[in-house]
Amino acid sequence: MLLRTISDGTAAETGSGFFRALVKNLSIALRTHGAWVTEYLEKTHRLRSLAFWLGDRYVEDYEYAVQGTPCEKLLRDKTYLHIPERVVELFPEDPDLPVIGAVSYIGFPLLDPDNRVLGNLAIVDTRPIPASLRSLSLFRIFAARATAELLRLRAEAKARLREAKLRGVFDGALDAIIELDQAFAVTMVNSAARKLFSNDGNELLGTSFTALLVPPDRERLERIVADLHTKPPGSRSVWIPEGLTALCRQGHTLRTEATLSLIDSGDPPSYVLILRDINERVEAEQAIARLRAETTYLRDELHLLSGHGDIIGTSRPVREALHLVSEVAPTDSTVLLYGETGTGKELFARAIHAASKRRSRSMITVNCAAIPEALMESEFFGHEKGAFTGATQQREGRFSLADKGTIFLDEIGELNLEMQAKLLRVLQEGEFSPVGSSRTRTVDVRVIAATNRDLLDRIEQGAFRRDLYYRLSVFPITIPPLRERGTDIDLLANSFAASFAARMGKRLAPLSSDVLQRLRAYEWPGNVRELQNVIERAIITAQHGRLIIDQALPQTTGAPSQPDRTTPQDDTTGSVMTIAQLQQLERDNLLQALHRCHWKIAGEHGAARLLGIPPSTLQSRLKALRIRRPH
Ligand SMILES: Nc1ncnc2c1ncn2[C@@H]1O[C@H](COP(=O)(O)OP(=O)(O)OP(=O)(O)O)[C@@H](O)[C@H]1O
Image (cartoon, rainbow, N blue to C red; front, side):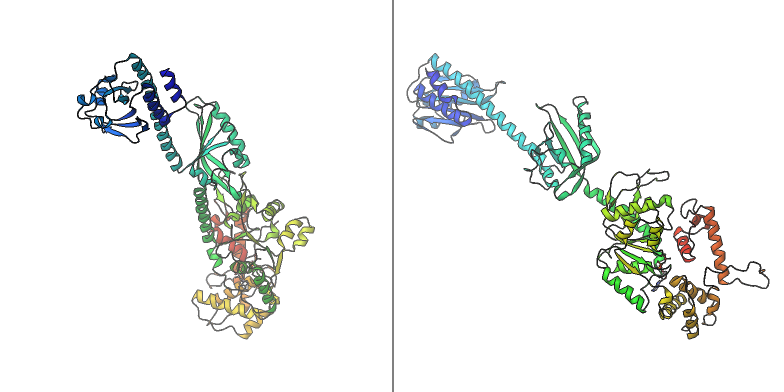
């Protein structure tokens, strides 16, 4: 009956509830004055009560030194202790026994499986307790039960501590750690994962992780998981070096390096995915590559730019064109510049870029007529390493270089139909794929195109796409030819003369009205560039600060005249060639080099190498001499 009373009284309890019920029921059932269960604190050699029943109530927070008490003997002997009477006399150093009015004592040590003391279970009474087998066996039973509960509590505390430590490591990790169930639903995330997905975590829990990936990576992950299951237990972990691209809020994508592990010790098994954000690293690498390519490009362009000052001209057609420039520049609209060769289309394109909000970024020029067809796509869109023979390095294309800036597509009318289709895609969707890559790249580029051809004519001939034409001619501006600019010729000629003279260190009188008259009378098929060349030649041959304009002006209004090769060059008399003859000689020489190199300009077998000049210099000479590849 006693056993049942105590058992029933404690059955429903665990932890401190159990200990309280135990001491109370034990004390009541055995009709003793008090009962307590304690935990031994080894460091301080004290006992702390887990529950203490005395008289008719609990004593809270009771702790006492072991020394001098009956419990000391109990702990030392590791066996039960029965003091039937006169306990105060036997343990005079125990301060509490007289206070309680104790006469007798029974205690049982609580021992763990290794026989180490965990605490004790004891009763005291104000009357003698005779030896009774019955209460001893009862005691033994409940001491064992108290021991089990104490051990359970300690294991629980240890597990809690370990979990807290793991949580600390889990949440303190810089990498995002995500636990997934068998169906790949998220079951747990650490704070780095919440940060990575800019999510408070609750929304992530239960969602399918594959839905958080870009579609190509979903299938890839499935293959990786299938592969993981074929690995032997103990090495079911894979590093995914090419990473996974996750979809975040607001449609942002996030590139990560990933490690996936299969945890098959649990039932059911689960996965742990560790992700490291490499967006910043990839972006920095791309920025470095872009800046490096931009630097090389700008270095090549530098000398071409040196001649570009402000647009000179006050004539009505120039003012009208400049007015249109000021209107369109601040917008992001595509501009199509029409104008004969050498009218200053590139200069106008630069003026538009310089007055636009993109001016802090580069304007990248592509001369569609000067790039060999085979290299055109790579030049426009870049290529991956190994995309074709000779592609030993990954290379950024002009469109990537122009990202957030402007691209100037000069001589757009010369673009072949295949490239026209690719260009159309960039204009329509803002994206392209580098040669040899399946990934699309997105760019934000403002396009300015220029042509000296009648594009509608080209459309009729089937050489130009109508849809591309309409995409390009959003805002057309016609640059007037020099012959329509009236007195602009005087302004331009004087400005060019002054700058050439300064560059050559010559002193020069202002251009005479006679010279200006002659210049105005000329037809200028090559427009401003030709005027520039004429003035440059005239400055070279200037005598006593005066220009000899007749010698500098081409003899006919077409292509420069053929030099008279029959005239013998008499070295001894020191006879000289005319500038026109010299120019023709240069033309012939360049053409010969180009033929020999199959019109390849740059590179090992290019004409520039053959001529011993940089490719950019050759390009500008070809432009100046109006040499084009025959169709
Ligand atoms: N209004 C101008 N004021 C000053 N210089 C000018 C002007 N127009 C053209 N130039 C100069 O004439 C030269 C030719 O100009 P640019 O290269 O811009 O012409 P283009 O129309 O693009 O030629 P192409 O059709 O051959 O590509 C450049 O050196 C440029 O600086």
